[in-house]
Image (cartoon, rainbow, N blue to C red; front, side, top):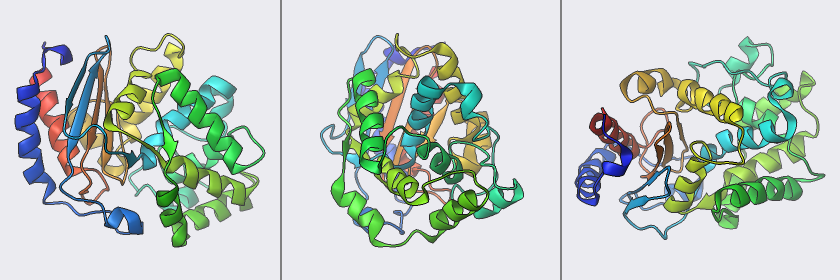
Length: 298
C-alpha cells in the first residue's frame, strides 16, 4: 500500500486541474451573502504527513472560514476539558439521514441532538464552552487550537457580519427547541458563540495543521482522537457520509465555505478548498481530489 509521503507535486497538480472542471458543476452557498461573492475558481490543497512534510498546490496565503469544519475540533476541545462521559449525556453519536440544519431530526429524537456534526449537536456543544460570554468562549477554543496545532486561526469579522446580516431561522428554531426541552441555557450567548466559531478562518496550511491533531499530537488523548475520527467517518459529510465512507473511507469534515478536511489514520491529513458545492453542501472539487488520493493509496 502506498503512503501519503510518496505523493508528488506533479500528481497533485494534475489532479487539481481535473478537479477544477468537476467544480464547475457545483454552486456557491447561497444563504450567506459573503460566500455568494467568493471566487468560484479558487482551488487548492495541502497534504501533510505525520512527519510534518507538507505538499501544497494552489495559493497557500488565501484565507477562508472553516464553517462546519470547526465542529470536530469543538468536540475534541470539549472532550479534553469535560470528558466523554459527560459530553455524550448532551449529544449522541449516531448518523443522520437529514440535512445538517434539519429541525425534523431533532424533533424525531425528542430534542436530543443526534451527533456533534449537525447543527443541533454543535449548538449544544457551543453552549458548553467555558466563558461568561461569546467572546470569551471563542477565545478559549481559538487559543487552545492554535496552541495545540501551531496554526493561526483568526476570527473573520467580515464573514461574521455577513452571517449575522440575515436571520438564520433554522438555527433559531433549533435553539428554541433545545431551550424549551431544557437541553441548553443561555440561547442568545450560545447562538452568538456558534456563529463566531464557525467564522474562525485559516489558510489551507493551517487547516492541514489542525488535521494533524487527529493524527500525531503528543498532547491529545488517543481515546479522544478515536472518538472524533469515528464520528467524522459516520457523520462528517452529512447525508453523504455513508456513501463517502464506502467509496473513500477517510474520516472527513466539510464546510459550506468549500473546505474539506480528511484524516488518513497513522499517515497524515488532507485539506482541500474549492467553493462550489454539491446538493449536500460538500465541495465538488475537494471530493474529486480525495477520491484521486484514495485511489492512489489503495
